[in-house]
Length: 336
Image 1 (cartoon, rainbow, N blue to C red):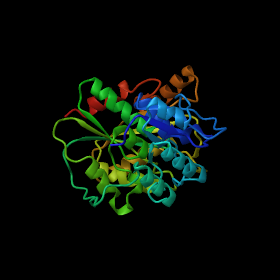
Image 2 (cartoon, helix red, strand yellow; image 1 turned 90 degrees about the vertical axis):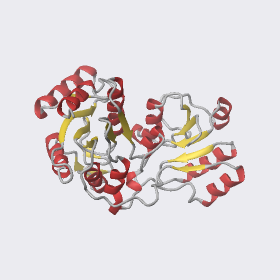
Image 3 (cartoon, rainbow, N blue to C red; image 1 turned 60 degrees about the vertical axis):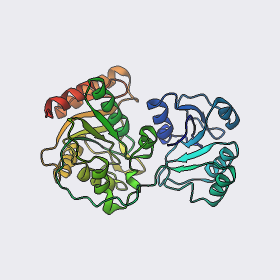
C-alpha cells in the first residue's frame, strides 16, 4: 500500500488533460492528496494548494505521486530531478509512467540511501494467464471510448458510486495508473504483454455469484491507431454484459494522432459491440457518458438530448449530471 497523504507533481504540463492522474486522485479521493507541486510557469492546477516540497512535508505528506501522463509514459530530466529532490526531502515516490522509477539508477540509489520506497504502479502482476474466452458467471460492465482520455475512468467510478448508493454490490476494476492509485489495486493493462491482455481482464474480473457488478475501466479506443490493441483485448477479456460509450463533446481529432478524426458515436458503438460479441454474444449498450466540460450548461443538456435521440440510449455527463439514468437502464436491461 502506498503511504498517504500524497503530494501530486504536475511537472511542466500545459494541457489539463495531461494532469489526469493528479486530477483523478484529487476528485475521487479527497483528503488523500493534500497538495500539488509543479515546475515554474506550469499553468495547470487540479485545485489543490500549491506547496513546495518542504511545505508539503510539514503538512504531513508522505508520498509524492507523479500526477501527469504523456505519450509513451516517458520521464523527462525535470521529473528525474524532482524525484531526487522529493527523496532528499523524505518522501516516497510513486509513478504510473511506463518509465520505471526503479529503472533509473540515480533515483534508485537515492531511495536506497534515504531508506524510502519507490512505487511503480505500471508494473503488472507476474504470471498473468492467457485468456480463454470461457463463459464465466457474474455481471460485468466495460466502458469504451471514441478516443483515449475521454472519461472512461470517471464514468466507471461514477457508476460504481451510484450502484452502491442504491445498495447494489459493485466494484471498480482499475486498468490504468490513475485508477490503480485511486482504488489501491488493479492491472496496468497497457503494460501487459499483448498475448495476455484478455487473460489479465479475466483475472481482474473472475466469476461472481453475488448478483453484484464488476465495473471494468476501459482504455484507449478501437479507433486509436496506437492503443486499439489494448482496447480490443479488454473487450474480449471483460466478457461484459453491458457497455457504456464515453466521449468528449467537441473533440474532433484523435489525441496524439491528429490525422485521424474522432469517429461518429453510432459507428464507434457498433464497432465495440461487434468486437465484444466474440466472447459475450448477448452484450448490450446501456448508455453514453459525455464529458461536456467545454460546453455551457444549457448547450450540454441539448447535446445529450441529441445523442439520446440518435442512439436511443440515456446520455449524461457523469461529473455535471450524474449517471442515474444510465444506471436505471443498466439495472432494467440486465436484471438477473
